[in-house]
Length: 444
Image (tube, rainbow, N blue to C red; front, side, top):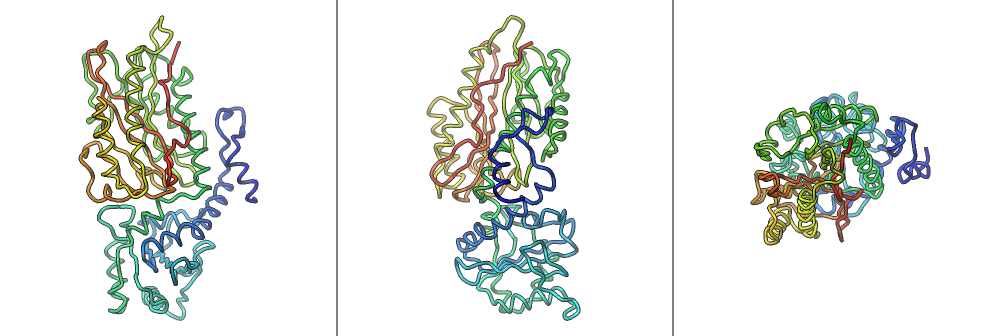
């Protein structure tokens, strides 16, 4: 498959067949694999050299055992590898800043097209000694290993393999070992232009799945339960040939004496409810495609008999949620930390009379991905470590937050809980496939 054809597939929202006509075309597994490998090669040629130069690390050593994979190594394996094999050792070396990377696999075979075999067991039976010899041959200034206290994504080197490596290295090479945290996070968080285009399609698919679920095709008011809708979403995602990286959540807020416990919903799944007219529905789900993930939350309202439109008080409440989004996205500037953006956004939103909670996170190769953490639901004063990481260009985020709003007609406070994917290009941040501008109306 040539690049021109791939580009057509990515930028054109073609129709696959009658059962999937409302969705952009989803590539076959074979074509997905080819595209994943092309993107990986492209990232090694464009993204990684820049990130290595930025980090000041000229050698990156990634070691992982089968079924105990380092989060980073899984993003570097070829598409047809489902796991590392035995002990997989990858070595990436940049002789000087900006230079072409040298990629080696201290393994019995090449690891895809990028990592060339650099070990012959007949000549040196000990894999660790061969790795140490290769490091000595290159004689790097710094040897980056995936060790981090703030990012689990960058902490994939297990203790036993660290010990084996250090025992194999000479004392002079041992002194060069440093944490590859910034290198690993930079690799994971940075998106290429082609990945940005894929995200446009992926977010469009996610939005259309939500819209289809928030309709009478999936819901029968008075009969369907929130769990029914959760499993409808799971089945729809599966039917499209996609995966979800977490079990979806569907919950309701309504005009009853019971208060909606937003904090409790983070630690315990909401109780099953029968979906009734007058309910404000909320969904939270994410899908995975071409190694990228989404994480989206939107709202719908079930119209009561005789109602022709969503009540004004809910429309106004929804607008407050969007205002919190605006206060947050206005903070995005290269170099600002997650904590700086969080505290500024909260301050401005509160000064505007809003009641915000912000818990935004990067999105990419992982659902809760590497990069600056911008609040957690239980850490509104800032998040030490990952919240101190700065914002870089060409990164993507789930703008996740809520606004608490008192509804006089219900005599209770509700939460407008929103989450949309956005891309930061270094100058501005924008919603990749737009954001929900108004509550979906479900009418009988």
